[in-house]
Each structure stands twice: as structure tokens, then as C-alpha cells.
Image 1 (spheres, each protein chain N blue to C red):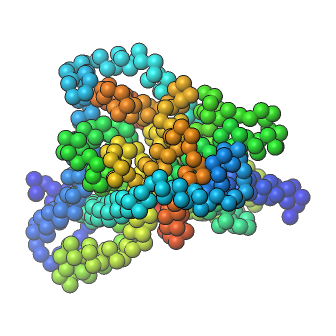
Image 2 (image 1 turned 180 degrees about the vertical axis):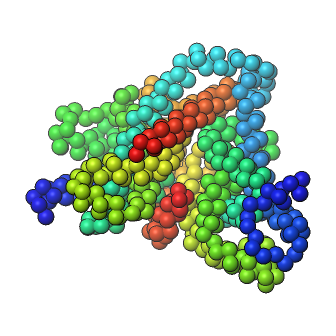
Image 3 (image 1 turned 90 degrees about the horizontal axis):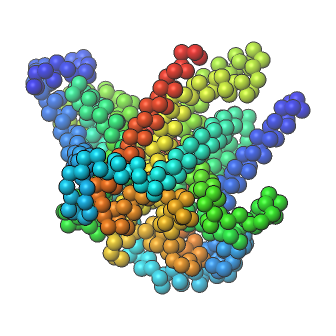
Amino acid sequence: MSPAAFIRRGIVYALLSIAAFLSVFPFYWMVVGATNKSADIVTGKPTFGGNLFANIATFFATIDVPRVFFNSTFIAVLGTVLTLAVSSLAGYGFEMFRSRFREHIFAFMLLLLSIPFSALMVPLFVMISAAHITNTFLAVIVPSISSIFIIFYFRQATKAFPSELRDAARVDGLKEWQIFLYIYMPVMRSTYAAATIIVFLANWNNYLWPLIVLSTPDTKTVTLVVSALTSAYTPDYGMILFGTVLATLPTLIIFFLLQRQFVQGLVGSVK
Amino acid sequence: MTQTQARDSVGPRTWRFTSPARLARGEQINGWLFIAPALILLGIFMIYPIIWSLWMSVQVGKGMNFSFGGWTNIIRLTKDPVFLRALTNTCIFFVVQVPIMIVLALLFANALNDDRLRFRGLFRTAIFLPCVTSLIAYSTLFKSMFAQDGVVNKALLFLHVTSDPIPWLQDPFWAKVLIIIAITWRWTGYNMVFYLAAMQNIDRSIYEAARIDGVPAWARFTHITIPMLKPVILFTTIISTIGTLQLFDEVYNLTAGTGGPSDSTLTIALYIYNLTFKFMPSFGYSATVSWVIVVIVGILSALQFLIARDRRPSE
């Protein structure tokens, strides 16, 4: 390697290391913060302290932890299952049974993708209020079940579904819904895995819409509760950072378990 | 209707057991059945709200009492200093943040696309990791890190980057910088993964040929990689545009819901939220404001498409 190339190499490693450090440092800070007193956190103490158990105690005393985690998990799991069911059916339908009219509908849906949620939230809120379902999990889940992004994702993935399988199943006399249930779904496992992660993370981390429709304490989710803690006049950061560790843990675990599918899932959506 | 649609069927059928007409009718019914749940839900929770919001945007009045106002809301928009500030802030976030993030993501992806680079997986995972945090969790983290005496100021003072602690959350300028740093931290890795995937699809032999011809690394990046990635860059730019114009969670959380100091970080989405849920609700006016976002997204997406298309023939 020539000296110039060697130096260039060194610079690349140095820059990547800095980027990696900056990316990971807040995670370190979060874990360290959970073990420190609030006063130490706002004055930038970057080492582990001895306040972890006190923080845990305060957090559990301030927040109904089991309730809040149950709410978040319930919303995320049910929302994910329903979204995958409805959106994968649609993605399969659009790709397998084509007609010019449905292609127009599909193109129109892609246009709708660019309409931001903030344009819809006011009418959605008025609808939910009129239906008297504010402060229910249904209100949180239902508007996002039919996800255009996930429908699009499944349609793209379905292009790789071997049509011989479907033809063989037809010869065997399977009905279309049976083909979907017994052939398509098992074959497309990895597509479902990727979509599960994307939808689960989106639901678990969702903030604005739950903030709007959930106002009673017994329906609050983890993100709502953690956010509410920070807006206190003198926030207790030790406890809050312990809360963010708890809120981030499920997503981190899912990410490391299914990292490959996660990356492929993101990538699959652009191809 | 069935007949015309049967003729329209695109899917090729190589063999048929039932008569073509019957099969085609079955195809039609199945085609609609599979997409029906999604379409019904979209109709209720997307199309209806859109129409409702369009209709509301020409209504005036507080709460549930409204009457037709014609252009009133649009005129009010142009005279509303808070809206203009929110619009300016949102545009600043968009104009400054999106290019920084896209360029960083491209550079990282390009560096990580090198087979000879060691620890690629480690770097990739590290840079991608911020994406798994919830917007709330990370804005909380940033709030504590960027406190007046916080760890970031301590580090900057230690490195002699600054001689006085930076008032991140108290100063209008630095508050904006903080928001931009925060979004960049959260989303750069996300965009990078898209680019990495697209780069892996580029035929290696193109690079080999360029290298043999003596094309330097930087020129290979700008003349081969970037043009090949144009569709993905366009896609991520549009996604980022929509995301930045909708900016809400981070600002709401970092500034305790105020968009402060003195409205310096107020975004359009936060203003809509305030109009609807903080002040006496004025649904008509907030609908008008939200359509401003739709219009801007539309214009910018069209513009980005045009730019991407214009350059293609010359390459």
C-alpha cells in the first residue's frame, strides 16, 4: 500500500470510529444515567454511580409500570397482527389479481403516501370523539391498520413468490384463501418477519396519535409516560433515564435478534 | 363492468381448466376480496379525513360551531406571525438538515461498501443503532446530555471547542442547532442502510474498469456511485422531506411542548397541534395550516423528481 493510500485509509477509519462513537455514546449515557442522581446527570458525570436502585424505586413509585407496559405491549402486538393481516392480504391481492382499475387504485394509494399525518390528525380526532372511543386501544390501533407503506412492501415482496406454487395449489383444488393461508404465508416467512419488526417498532414508539387520543392514566403508554416525566419543572433524570432504558430495551432486543431481516426489510421496500 | 375488466386483466394465464370467462370472473371477485379490508379502512381513516379536512379548511369558527369562510383562513395564514415563524423554522430545519444527513449517509455508506475495510459489520451496526430508539427516548436523552452543565458542554470545554458553555436549550439559534443535531443522529444510519443496499447492487466490474483507467476514488464516487444511486437518493430525500416537514415529537419533547425559546423551534405540526388541542380549537384554521404541509410536500417532491430526471440523460 502506498503511503498516500495508507493515510487515506487511516482517515476513513478515524472518521468511521468517530461516527460510531457518537452514534453509540447516547446509549452508554442512557445506561450510565440510570445509575446516577439527577444532579450528576445534568452536570455531565460520565461514569457509573450508585443510584440505580433508588432510581428504580422512584420510577416504580411514580408510574404504574406493569399497567403502562401492558398497554404499550397490547397496542403494539395487536396493532402489528392486524396491520400485517390486512396489509399483506392487500399486497398479495394487488400483485396476484391484476386489473387495470385496481392498478389505478394502487397508483392513487402511492400518491396518498405523501400526505403527512398532521393533515389527517384533526379530522381523525373529531371522528374518534364522535364515535365515543377516545381513551380506548381501538382508537390508537384502528387508523393505522391499513398501512399503504406495508401494502406496498408486501406487493413488492410478492413479486418474488413463485407462481408455480400457486398454480400447483390450484391444480390440487385449493381455494384462493387457502393458498394464501397455507402456501403464501409460510413461504413468505422472512417478509413477515421484516414487516413485523417495522410495524412493531412504529407502534411501540408511536407518540403523537396516542398523545391525542389517550388522556386517562390507565390507558397511557410507555412513550407517553416517559415524555410526561421530562416536562416536569425539575425533571428527575435518574429516574427518567431508567425509564428510557426500559422503553428502549424491547426495541433493542428485537433489533439484535432480527438484525438481518430488519435491514433486509428496509432495503426490500426500495427495490 | 365485469366484461370490460376481464378484458383488462393483465396477468398472463398459460393454461385454463375452467372456461376463461368464469375464471376471469373468479379472479375479479378474488382480486377485490383480498384488497377489500384494506380499501375500506383506507376509505374511512384516510380518504374521509382528507375530504373532511379539505372542507374544514374553508370553514371559520371555534369549536364545533363553524360557517363557510371562503378565503378567510388563507388570508389569516398570511397575516399570522406565529404561522410564518413556524413555516420559517420548518423550512430552516428542512433546508439545513436534509442535505447534511443525506451527504453524511452517502459518505458512510461509501466507506462501508469497501470489501477491504475491517470491522464493517461493527461500524454499520453502530451507525444504524440510533434508528431503534423511540423519538421520545432519544429526545429525552439529548435533553439531559445538552443541559447547560451537561456532558456535551463539558466535552466541548475540555476539547477547547468553545470557551463558554453553549446555551443549547435557552438560545433561539442553538436550540435550532440542537434539533438538527438530534434528527441527524437519529436518521443518518437509516438512510445509510438504503444506500448500502443499493451500492451492493452496482456491478463491481464498473469500478474495476474505472480503476484500471486511473479514475481516482473521489471521481469514482461522484461519477459512478452517485448517478447509480439516483433513484434511491430521490426516494430517501422525499421520505426525509416528508419527515422533516412533519417534525413534532422531538421538538415537543425537547422544549416541553412549547416550541421555545420564544417560538424559535416551533414547527408547523406543533402549531397545528397547539391550534387544535391547546388553544380553543379552531378546526377550520388548523385544517388550512395542515394543507400548507401537503402543498409544500407536493411541490418539493415534484421538484426533486424534476431535478433527478433532468440530469439523467447527460450521464
